[in-house]
Length: 158
Picture 1 (cartoon, rainbow, N blue to C red):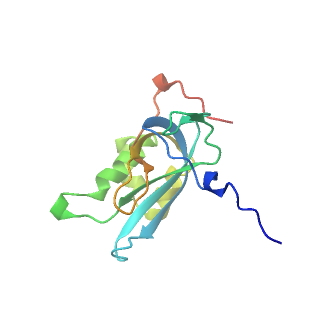
Picture 2 (cartoon, one colour; picture 1 turned 90 degrees about the horizontal axis):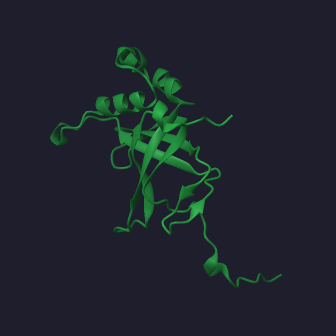
Picture 3 (cartoon, rainbow, N blue to C red; picture 1 turned 30 degrees about the vertical axis):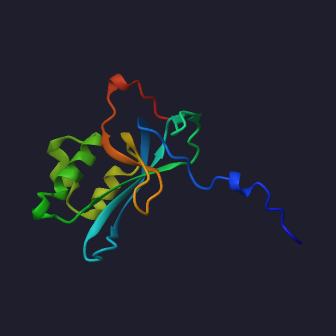
């Protein structure tokens, strides 16, 4: 049987690219992964599901996110040359999850403990559009996370 491939150039694969916006998201996983350039160093990769009913794509269309996931990652290895300390990034993540300073040391005690404290938490994620660059196609990423405030009028889905 021969397949009719007419019109395949109009088929899109993968998730749409989102425009700059703020969305609500629920953390579904957080895992440490080896960095490609140096497997002795780790990245924390946080996966979130978008909770908004509609989001805006780069064509300014309102679309339902369905099962679209967002990824937020950062290095867990300090870099003194760049004045980078991962503890500040972890602290920002915990604050976005609603934790207060007095609980930080306890929560950051171990990787497993840390992951258990953030999975299932709802956060506000700032999505940033990234134009094509080098070998990379256009894309979006999570620029930063914030805590959801009462003034956001957010009602978690059932």
